[in-house]
Length: 316
Image 1: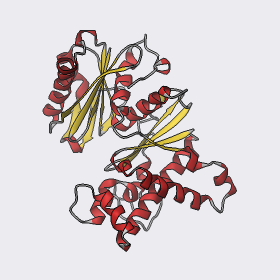
Image 2: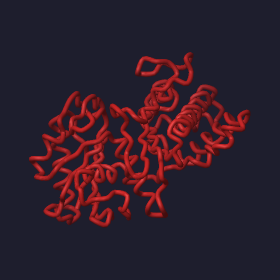
Image 3: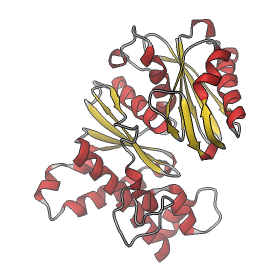
């Protein structure tokens, strides 16, 4: 038995995965604010999974945690998880003694990439390579090749959100201009929209459909940013597919139609780009997918020599 947690800014998703790779228990709890509360959230979520779903915690061999922020390679230490009120926290060291099992920690987007790759085993053989592009408050990607997460030399592989595609574009929170995230990040779009709303990106699309020129510019910028990220991921890593996930993808076909049109238009003058069939290599992660928590469970199992993630068949 392995446990995986996706610690988000407001909610934490926790799953139990058995030896066959099946998800046999799932639960969502509120996420606490600050280092101590995040530690308590992880511990309490695992215990609640046992008490509320009947999962036998005595059979748990490992726990994996996907969390926003930078995770120092080879450690369980997370820094700059600003949406959780965490500046610096050795999460593995704090949680492992309380749960009595090994704990591994990974960036949430990278964990989701592993989970999305594994979920492809449900409908057929998983692709040899995949990029998971997370479109949330920010924009980042995780890359999986032959079942293995590619972290890069310093763990920055897939940080496509801060590639500038327009030196005269909007200012990004990183200080550059025209970053992919400045066009396609939900936080940047909401800030530039400037109107109070529970779902600002959806409001932008609705207003664009109604003819609002400001909304139309923001909507076109979103498609431009996502298409640019897809091109970067394919041209640098030549992944088989790019899976889109994150809160912005709740727009579904409305988003996909715009992105496909932008990819096709930008390739119109280039036979080489047309030969890559980029629009056909983009998929949406199904709504409510447990990819991030599942990926965290796989990360937690990486230290288990008896486990081969490429042989896991995931159900649920």
